[in-house]
Image (cartoon, rainbow, N blue to C red):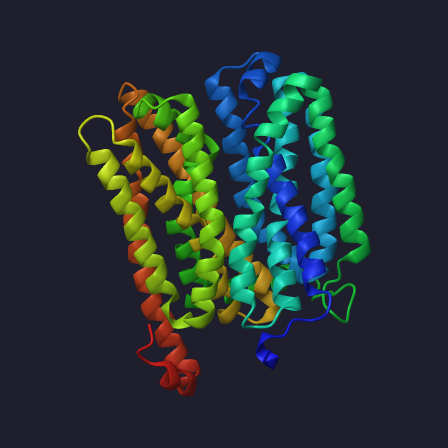
Length: 423
């Protein structure tokens, strides 16, 4: 193993604990997906109020990304991850005891906050503990493995709700946070030679400078639009509209709709390591790869939406596989951030990028619902809204790909000369 391929001793232990914290965060994020009917009865709410839970979590998650990134640059990933784990545990406990809709909304608000405080920390730990050549592979494995939390939230939570009831089921889910909190406290270090790392104080001047410098670099903006254009389709299907689209729009059975969503998650998990290995070996093809994946997703959706009547079942399988690949492809945006920003503002820049896909998801979730209400539940018309965001995203990826390369030519002409023409 070459020096470039070596990781620090204990790197995988730190990564696995951080990954467990992220997996638990995804579990808490997704735990309401299988409790919709129970929640409707418990809080005496309708479909619109139920969907507000999802919209609220997306808003909070996206809105917290920049503050969390700044906090990680200031206090280190370990401290922020600990705070997130504690907040998730307490808020999920509050959700277990909630008996009114407003109380439940407040609890889910803080679940969203705790969720938002995990992923950026994990990416920062990966950057600190692994070698430059390993970082892309580990990064693109992290997101897909974390999605196991969504699978774990399905069958076990369904069983727990039917067996123990609402309060005990959510208390059981919250209790796992105690284990994660203890593991992070005892075994996670910010860097191999330092338990805790602190950055400059968070004065308004430093905050403005960090955010301005991060956003000014075209590589950060390229990463933002990569994340924006690749992730939202899988998020929208997985969190809210996938099941209704397949059952009511394509008239599949409920079992087959569930199978399709499972296949999408499996595609996410398998695509991550493959894409990670590719960009580690071909870093100059990252934007080309993203644009190719988005075009493939658009082609799959076009085939389904343009099909007269219900699309064949095999075509729906192809669709969820293509859409699933978009999930880990969004992680490529973080690799652009890593190679475009110094370490002292890396998490702030990561937070900027991480909000992109969730903002796109939020816009799409709302737009699909509005279009459905105004077209007598025409799912094909509603899902066609995605082309607006794909078109915007692809134009911006191409635009900032050109600007990023021009910036590299200006700042490091020797490096550009060695790699010119490689993508």
